[in-house]
Amino acid sequence: MATPLVLSVDLGTGGPKVALVDALGNIAASAVRSVQTRLLPDHGAEQDAEEIWRSVIDAANEVLDRARGSRSAVQAVTCTSQYFSLVCLDRTLRPAMNLIVWMDTRGGAQTRSLYDREAEVFQTWLEIHGMLPLPSGNDSLSHMLWVKEARPEVYDRTYKFVEPVDFLLARFTGSVTANLCSAFALLLTDNRQLDRPAYSPQLLALSGIDPAKLPDLVEINADLGTLAPQVARQLGLPDGVKVFSGTNDTQAVAVGTATFHGGAALNVGTTSQVVAHVEEKKTDIAAGIVSMPSPIRGRYVAMAENGLGGKTLDHFLRQIIFANDRLADHSQDDLFAGVDATVREVPPGARGLLYLPWLSGSGSPRGHHRARGGFLNMSLECGRAEMLRAVLEGVALNLRWLVEPMQAFVGRRFDGFAFSGGGAMSQQWGQTMADVMQVPVSPLADPRHVNNRATAFLAFVETGVLGLDDIGSMCRTGPTYEPRQELRDLYDRRFEQFVAAFENNLPIFEALNE
Image 1 (spheres, one colour):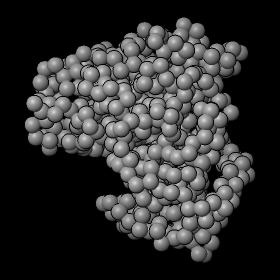
Image 2 (cartoon, helix red, strand yellow; image 1 turned 60 degrees about the horizontal axis):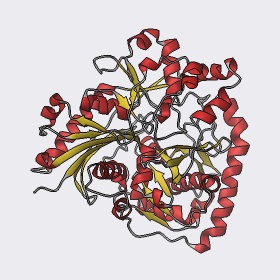
Image 3 (spheres, one colour; image 1 turned 90 degrees about the vertical axis):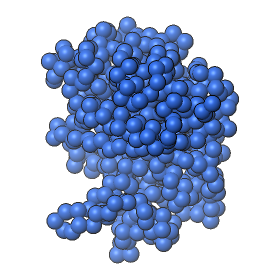
């Protein structure tokens, strides 16, 4: 009998990653596709949802073709995605407008008006949901409010507002659903009772969003039925392939790094996070840390979005080092090929150069949408290599800023971290994380597929192939990076100045970005 496989889709901001995963966590084949983000002059950010769907089907067919004989072994399809993004689906399950990406801030004014109209908004949202609508507009409720006011014709045509993961699942199954994990970013669910999924009548009344336009809620990890026949034909899959309800990507990381066993993880993808599990719903407003429902039933994931992570390195390489413009063509196919070798040539501390990674605003523990990035303290000794090391150190320092508040939030100290996401592919970034954090850091053996494995493991648990306790042993790590004690004082001083750079430059950021 063929080894059972799960077809797992991990939709990031940059595009989907599709993988075939077996019950041991082995990747039979995987493929990646890119999706364009369109930045609009009014602080909008959109993607073509149909382009995303075509990319998913194309990548899925590639991995099924490459893993010969795999089609008959596929038992289930699972999905995870970036979140705080919104798809407006019409009754034919097609987008009524472009997908609104999490970095879009056009709904900020509408969200701020909530606080102006209703005195109880703040406390009510904290008590029922756990997270506040963001004045910056970087959440899915803000996007819905903006659509309702600025695009009333789209609001009227919208059958259901869904997160990207539930858009994919709607197309896979033909029905529109969500669960307390995937619907978290809509900010309208009651997260106090995880065994009774429901939208909050109070929050719906305060928001003014029509509840009929929200997806039906199902249980976390629910069996949604089987693949729609037309999709099964597109993929060449047999009848009876199950589809399971999905998660957002932070929740997937929390499972794929086994933090529900009591550990903690660093994740550096497009954005960066410190991830852990907690037993109860709670919120730290000052540090911007909330608990959201976990795919592990009855548990919560401590969530704190730290701002851009791997995207800062991508931006530096793509826009500065390997740019193609009127000055010169330095373009290169593999942007990351020389990163580790180059960083290795520069001593820790980057010869005094400090990088501020807030290219699209800062996140936890000091969120501010007008903060921006840059290099500080550049001298004649600093060249491209120093700048590259400073980028890696800047992201690590930003994550260190979040560790102490996260430890207070979960009620325990972190004596080490798993390390996942594309950033964990870099040996130098892994060592830098250990040196900056001053605790051991253990990259996953295959960090790029952490989300694919996580959702596949959850599907195998639901089908009885795995037990929940088996997941921890499947989250394999590579060699651990030990902190170099001789660098403790250096990075303690650097961290102090990193925080000071934020505080002292904030008035400048506010003035320049008003």
